[in-house]
Structure formats: structure tokens, C-alpha cells
Image (tube, rainbow, N blue to C red; front, side, top):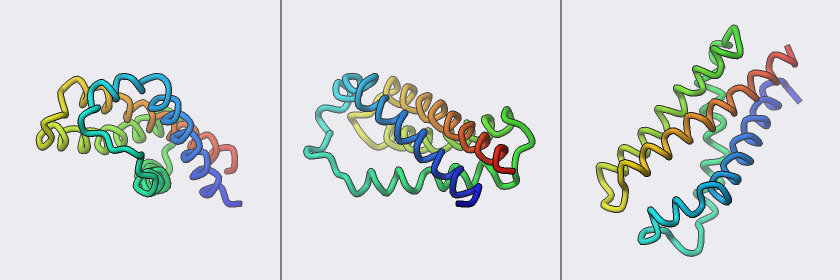
Length: 131
């Protein structure tokens, strides 16, 4: 397996595992309390799978092209990707959805920055190790 494929797998694993912990345990009640009126039942699997397969590709493409020269640089680039992606989502929802509020937008955006930074760090570690 190539270094890029392994780095993608690491990115996917980190995002999937951390988001499962965040959404399924740590912040489950927060999101349920904030969005109960607009949550779908049952959960829609296909859009989630598309996000979890596609987002790591975007993280890889935008963080590692060109290859950063340090872990710090990789984490900062990944944080910027997370900020742009999650802020776009959250601020658009804030502008258009009555159920969205500032607290939800700020918490979710901060989570996206953290999550994407961790994924970027994992991918960088794999790429450097394989180099």
C-alpha cells in the first residue's frame, strides 16, 4: 500500500473514531438538545458514508499539497481546512435554519478544527514515517 493510501486510511480512522466518540458519547446530548426538532429518524446512512469517505480526501488534498515541512505546519494547515469546512457548514446553517444557534455553530466549528487537526497530524506522521 502506498504512503498516500496509508495516510488516507489514518485520516479516515481518526475522523471516524473521534467523531463517533464525540457524536455518540461526549456531545450526544448537546446535539440532541439543540436539534431535537429537526433531527431525522432513522439516521440517514448514505450521506454519512459519503461525508466520511470524502472529507478525508479533502483534508489530504488541501493539507499535503505541497507536503508541509513540519508536524506543526501540517496541523495548522489541517486546522485551517477544518475551520473553513465546518464554519461554512455552521454559518450557512446559522443564516438559513431557525433551529441553528450561535452556541451550536461555535461548538461544532471548534470541534471541526480539533478533529481535522488530529487527522492531519496522523496523516503527517504516516507520510513522514513512510518517506
